[in-house]
Image (cartoon, rainbow, N blue to C red; front, side, top):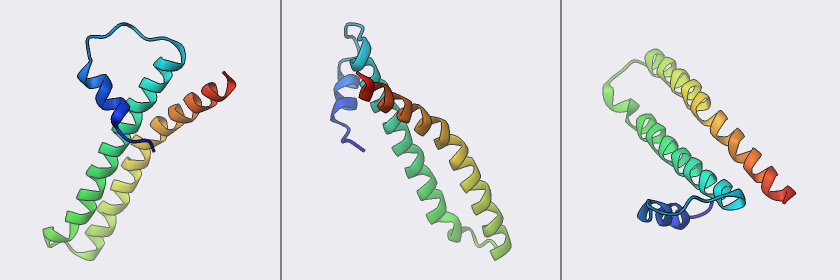
Length: 92
């Protein structure tokens, strides 16, 4: 994924003229990619902390399965949209 320079630029200049076409798709892509990074970071932190709770092995497995399922549920539509944006950009 690209660095956050484009996303930071957008956030610093929130009062900007409306953008269209490829610029709009690139902005949307940057927003979605940043959200994916934040989601992945939160899930990784939660996975890392699981052993700190003193849970039994069975409960850790159960929570891990739930976390993986919810992570996939959160990331799948975001990645799907990014793929569609990439496809549209290739057509132009």
